[in-house]
Image (cartoon, rainbow, N blue to C red; front, top):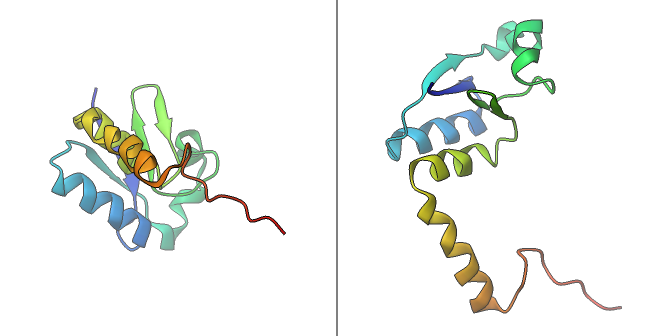
Length: 105
């Protein structure tokens, strides 16, 4: 069971995920989805991602469809230690979350 990455390299978010995976040596099977031919709108792809958007990551029964979280999930599978840096960043800036503080009127 390996990771399947559904993307079209003409899409900038897809290229970013693809480059990230290659650069970090994360093994995956490339499943090309041609956006110009509307392959992302097919019933077959809708089973992978009901929102019919790329990139999408499938690993066994787990499917991830949000492009911002695909690299994070791939990193965790390869090396979960990268996530520890976020808490250090939050402590440095005195925040308990990554959201910006609200301004008072």
